[in-house]
Image (cartoon, rainbow, N blue to C red):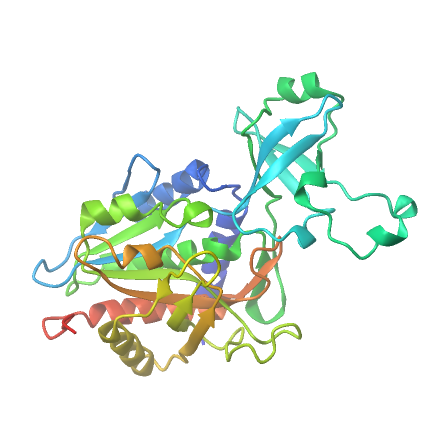
Length: 367
């Protein structure tokens, strides 16, 4: 079991990350936080034109190089129309379910990088008609109430067409080292990789590892591609959520349980508007399974449809990249209250470190 100090440290990092608003395409504040944390660990980083944050930890150049990445951005909304009476219409950025939007707390990031508090309005119950009680309000009929008097008041406060909007940043601890937050996807992955970077930096015998915190995954899944094309890694390890099956609404969907260890994806397939997904490279599956056994970590196995990550596109870059998705169990994806377990994250960190050190002179990528 992870020790209390390790749990508390990871919890603090995750909380700080979750409480930063960072819509797809507007990840700068998240990037600045991560860059500062890397600098505190004596690790240099730089960002590219899109805003991807890159930190290269040099290793044995005779070994296959690795990119280890998680996305910084979160899903949300963008202002699309300001009504004369000060109410704000918006459009979704990423896969946000309409059924979960009314009455949500949100923040709008204005032109001074300030958070403007608001809510997505819900029609007063006493005025709701019979045919409205059991229907989902479409996004075109939803609006944000931030307390503004009129359109002039909105503009005066630095909010305009195109301003980014996210769920109001939120984080709290639950029982049994479970935590709840507004952007666990994928700030938990970022927290894990940040911890991995610190440990890898101190290990002597290792391949070169490119730590990358990527952008725009929730928007179009391709923000990391310029980094891939530039660094040309041999191996890609992507860290993101894995859906659990331990809640009443998900029972029977898989064998993934919160608090039961990190996850390895053996198959993912979107099947909704794209035929993309990832079947992992067998050599990478092998080293992660060996790493789990060596560290006595329970490695949960996932095979799922309806799932798509940026690694789906990464694997086809350059001459082809050996790719694998490694994850942490998470409940309630893409809602304003996602739940994960800190013990799973710490086991995931240790799993990744051990697996990477198994990429040695005997490791082969040939099929």
